[in-house]
Amino acid sequence: MRSMFIAAALALAFFTTVPVPAQEAMTADDLQMLCQGTDHVSRNACRIYILGVTQGVSLGISIARGKGAGRPCVPTGISAESLEQTVKTRLGKDLGDHPADGTHDAAGFIGAVLAETYPCLKPH
Image 1 (cartoon, rainbow, N blue to C red):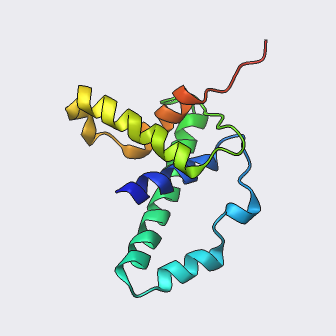
Image 2 (cartoon, rainbow, N blue to C red):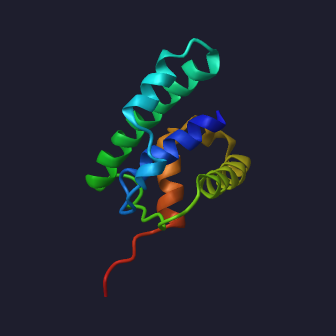
């Protein structure tokens, strides 16, 4: 589950104004190696990465159409660990306060957290 949140956060980063540095981006070769792996960790990482990107694309389209949360502007250089901690903190708080919200779309939740935590500033 932890990997799914990281994958979804990384996929959402594609739709922010922050370019992902080339050395940190997963390449098609990297993905192929994961997806050709025979161990359960590789197979799960492949599936979760594809799911995260797919949900990120859907979320990006929703944001672009003005549905749901506003567009996030994640700061340059923010670490995956920092993103993970931000989302995990909000999961604990929000689902602790409203357990029924646990059935909501995870990508939408992450998008809302990022938009609230790192809002794009409107020019004056």
